[in-house]
Image (cartoon, rainbow, N blue to C red; front, side, top):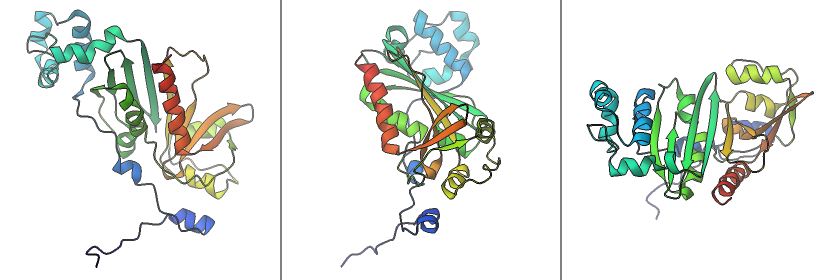
Amino acid sequence: MNEYPHKEPRMDGFLAHHTGERLEELSGIAGRQPYASAGPKISPETLELLETAAQAGKLGRLVAGSRSADLAPLVRAGLLTDKGALTSQGRLVTGPWRESFASLRLSAQHQGRASDFQVWISAEGCLVLAGPSAATMISGPADEWHQVDFLAADHLYPALAAWVGIAPAWNVASETSVVDGELVGARVRDRTVAPPVGADAPLVNMWQQPWVLWRLVVEPDHTHAVPATYLNAGSAGHYHLGSDDAGTHLTPVPSSAVYRVLAHQIDALLHS
């Protein structure tokens, strides 16, 4: 006899009402798989010191002495000595700043707040500077900081996906919606902006979700294509954003396809 009673998964209320199907609610998965890093969170002032030490090998004596509060997080993380010199770990972690063959930046926006996930890639590994993730921005105002990390190249894919919140979702919408561009821009900045008049149920549902607009830029980019812009609409899934004279095109994209696009761009960057 099973000692643990079977627990039914929570059903997605919108899907049950809109389609009549009993499907598991997936909106909580991203929250249970957040971006996580063991690296130190540092302020812009501390980041400035790290960049200076990375280029020169150490900080000047006067700088190290007068800015001990900014230096302290780097000393605790084992990146610099209390005299401002790079440790062996510090040289490894900051090496990609000096020896990178490629870089990328994933920039994100949520209701007027902006953050980014920056990566410099070298033969030894990847230096990561990660600002507040999509989930952190949605949960409330965050201080200005970056988290320093050093990753193997094959760990970039899941780290980027977790940071921007790519997770399973039910894509109810099957066709592209064309919406006035100014209205979409207003909604990106302010969640209380009403959906367009005459919007169908899937568009209204995605309009009511927390939005994170994001774009990935890689260097070097041998395709010379305009970076794609995506909209993470929470439980309503991801949308690709395009625009023309008719307005902004919101095209639903399965989460698995978004992940593949992300992985393909990084793979091309690593092996170009």
